[in-house]
Length: 242
Image (tube, rainbow, N blue to C red):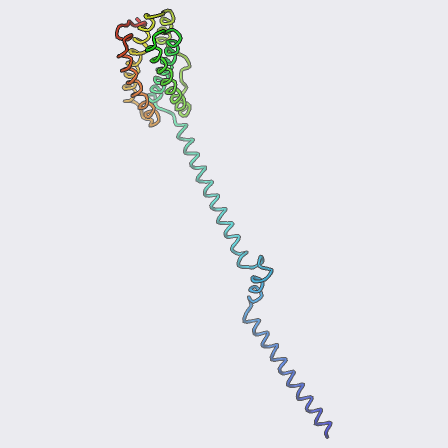
């Protein structure tokens, strides 16, 4: 009887243990089902952080945004470059082209006759004036050439017949005769002609760059003309062009 009681007791204890064990498994299963992302959270906090699903989902989006931004930037840059190229290649009107060529010829003539005066004149005032012509019109010519290149205009590479003839006559002169002829022509007459052309061309200029170029030339030419007319050599001189 005593053995039977002991056996029944052991069986009861085993049954209770089995019941508690089954309850524990069910509780663990329920907990796992209620927290399906628990493993992900552990990975996020642990050594597997670089495999976190949230981070990986965000990365393609960020890369996509960067790619889209780069494409938009490149597209805008290409568009802007196209517009610049289009503006630079636009053909000028006949009036704009004539204005550029007139300014180029005037600058070339003043530089050439100025250099001639520097080599032939013995008059300090005349040489100073000639040096100013070389410097000012040389700088102006560079600006004209830059705009002409931008606009696709081919400039003259040598003096026209009028200026060639004047230079040829000046070449044959020396001393006071040269000074008077140079100041009367290169100083006064040429600057009057240039100023008249600038005023006439201004009425036909349409391109803003060409207009700006003409506006820069005009006060320089006016100053040169005023200085030339005040020179003693110009007041008592004769013109070599006649």
